[in-house]
Length: 430
Image (tube, rainbow, N blue to C red; front, side):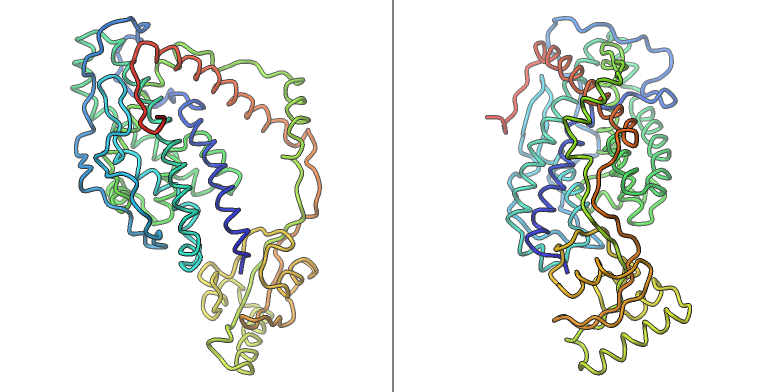
């Protein structure tokens, strides 16, 4: 029902927004104090010294890039696009460490899944090239993030004494598993209870754990074994994600110890940010609604009219709208209770529906609406009129955003210093 051009623009803009979260994932986070990533008794890492760059870490155990497969999703299969790289292709080196395409392709697929899972297959096929381009952009961004994380991980290991490093290697599997499981078990219920705004904040807090929790919620998964089965559809595994979590968190130890992450944010800085980005705090008229539909391709006109009226009468007589939609409606969102998310005027291909959504009183059932797809009855759940958020309403959000910006700047500066001592090669930057 959504305009194809707007769908394409929305896909590109939404993915562009998530790129910012991905790029700042490593930088905006610190190691949770309640879930230490290395055993008690380890000394704090010493400042990195200029020294030979030994082989400091192996590829995660259990990883077999050659057997990595693209996901076979239960909800929606991605359109097949040309594979840019084989999983065993080396995309970058950090010191003597390799970053392969097989490390990142599953992440690309997981991020894309967020945005295409509910798009009809016909639309996915139509925008195959756009999706392929977005995958390329995602891969480039994820590679830079992986390089930064690997640089810090290598630097952390180089800062340890030989006996400390040996002890770490002996316990890394059990320690990282305990920390990973604990952090994921804490994140999962938060994702379950989150609305869209809160979900964005959770992604900003920890993109990795939030994404894994979203996948678990989508599949009603509760255990690490179930998570592993989901991840294998994306070409990843529990072991791979655990090692990724461990490497990132070991590297964060250096950030915590060497970077000021608590810079004070003043009222003037927040107000200046608000005024500079005032367009971000303006909003258009928008609405969300529920819909019951009978499609003309399935029924003669008179029969379709009778069936949609019967559904509407059931709702008027007290039956839950969601349940009637799930049982009888033929619309794309029927399995979701007929619920449609926010749209703005002009976003829909169906002009009769578009007009009804922005003229019908909220919470009132519409008369039967006819368009070229069939007959429909809708109910507007919520509608907002164009306006602007006041500074006081968004002040705390601005403070959080400025903290992230300051942290990112400080951490990027620190990573640049560390890179002077660890050679890095990025194939996608050539």
